[in-house]
Image (cartoon, rainbow, N blue to C red; front, top):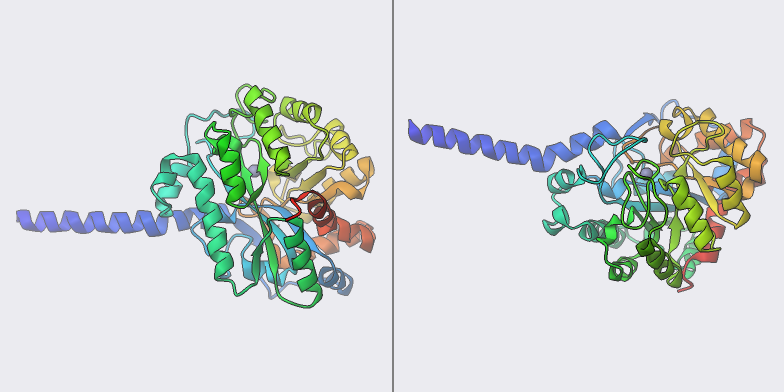
Length: 391
Ligand SMILES: [Zn+2]
């Protein structure tokens, strides 16, 4: 009898462990990353949109794919980005950012850094044990995932570390080679664990853009969803100086209003806001004010417009285009980019393969071919060619 109870308990434990390590993370991914239009059968775009999609250099500032227990190289039936879908969409470049730590009950108003969803997810997704407790290790592991995918991609995925890398990809694409660039970014500099030396470690791991904060205030600065929403700290100033020295791009997405002001006062360098909406079309605490849009544009910065409800009101492509139109009227099209937040626990209308739907919507809104090409990637590519380390 006792033997039977013990073996039943052992079996139940094994099943529970298998579920935790091989099912829980995947279910969470499927539940949280939803694409409303993933069906190829009723997908059609205008010949004009198709022509633009074929000719343009398409790019996007923000995908969280590396967080999930999902292959970069195989096409999934949920979510928004993977190499096959980026190739089908004719992407030149996708920025992959490492999510480091997110608070329980995460919201756009007020969070602190005391709780963390990613510890359990890192364990469920079988990340190395040191990444369960160390935030720098989480960034290093997500970089490892993209490098492994690059090695196994038969040359179709190339990690971009320099402007020369990006030029090479553009040249290869002009020669009709199938290749997509991937640029590594961090979402929240709690990834530094308070150690300035980790700027170098993350740079060496391939990271070329750092988002200063995520959903809570950290040692570098305040978040738009933090408890105090303060500005740039003395440690933050030290970090920005170290970043500028290495030409690491500054991403102000999720930053508190005070942090944006402080960074713009601390340096004249152009900055990126990788995934955002604008208060002018959707009043959310994480969206950009007119004043910040103007000041970021004045210094040659880039604004990535998000595809999800929290940025533009609903995933309807018309809302994305409304935000784009608003920025264009305020500062012109030269500062507008795509900042999807694909696979960021978001519901979007289309995935990378079906980016043509957005092109059609931009045509509908009377943007010219040249303007559309800038918005869907030209601006981002030009910015990166100018501001990435040369080699
Ligand atoms: Zn984000």
